[in-house]
Image 1: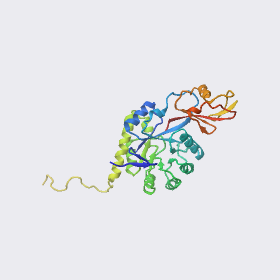
Image 2: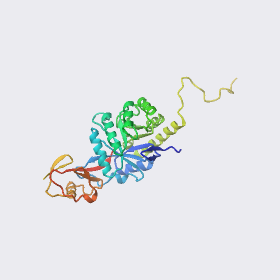
Image 3: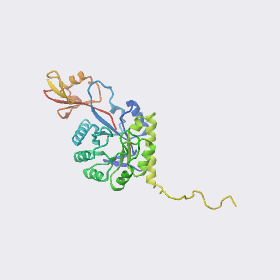
Image 4: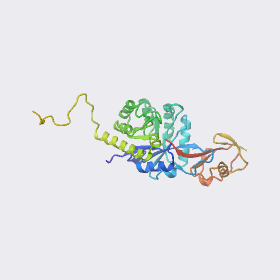
Length: 256
Length: 66
């Protein structure tokens, strides 16, 4: 199916985006990316205080991938903007996932600060993908601030609870003319498929893959789930009915 | 002399280079690591920069993240 997702001038075929955190090894992460044919991945930036592995995670991400730095660790817009600028200066390109969180318990994003950071970074030419707590007014503000997509959470990061915010996400899909990328809390391929059936443009998951018993197979499963949901959406989702409608003919029964 | 390293005050030898500092920290050969010096991200060729008093240094790496 010739159905590309266009973001920041780039054509993306695989609508499953993968976070690279929590993998038990860089090599395992690499295999998950290769086998699932994921194209868009996220990375983070952290201070290094000494020692550490002699491996560069970037060496384990296929060259064909689009790498999006996240601004995790940022507690406000200023910190997010700083992280994005550092990532770009370090050669990471201009795709950035804005993640501004000052809530340590639920890791819920701060929409107000996210909108501020989006406006600043969009003006500087970044392809801004803001992670936010789904709200229609804030989605409009993010769009107006120059976001390339909006990334509503499905449920809190790492909880695997799926699309708890389904109703609002559906509203956002219906009302905002930007790709909607569900990010956070997606624990199963079926939940990813569900997001795509709503009309979302893509799904980002990390924990469910990285901490799976078999991360490589799980990455493939998610990729297939996202594809299935997308195909179903494009084909047209069947309407629910309150009464039964037979699938086999109602005449010519083998009975008197 | 005192510099600020990764947000904390740190005593280092006068006229130390960034390269020597990285060696001291044990991250010289860590290919993922890069340095921001007084707000500027340095290329590999710029690591010979000599640090000054109260310079602000960030030693940073790309890591896995969601």
